[in-house]
Image 1 (spheres, rainbow, N blue to C red):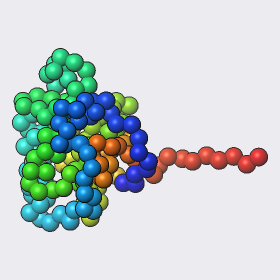
Image 2 (image 1 turned 60 degrees about the vertical axis):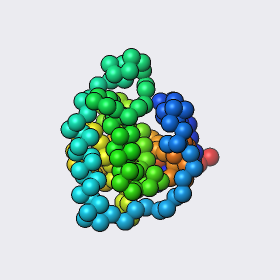
Image 3 (image 1 turned 135 degrees about the vertical axis):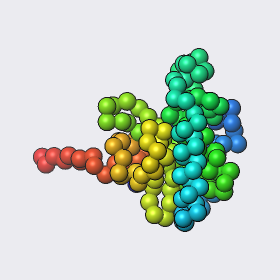
Length: 170
């Protein structure tokens, strides 16, 4: 996944950062994590556990307002699933610089949030709509932006690699 310039932070994440200041700010970019068999087992376990125990629900249903990012207790929407996975994996020792909230567009055009796991083997996606953890390029999404690996309160654009550049000759 190739990232571009710093871009706007989603409003839901901005509000989340106001409530959870320790979750958002400069982090030591340790470089992509080298995942071994034991690490993969733990990552898969966390992904499945969150996907199976949290009930999908809209922010309006759970919090009574639109676009509210929070750690879910029993129910939440896509970013809530991703936040909980991120928290649990950070508690297991994976650096915040390798667990990045990511905004994508689904094939139907709807916005969606997933968690990107940066590894030496590539960038993998933990998704509440899919139990299998997949390489980002093997998902059906268009990638828009994600947290910066150097500062989890900042966001960067994602270069999809399939955008066609058009030039003209005068």
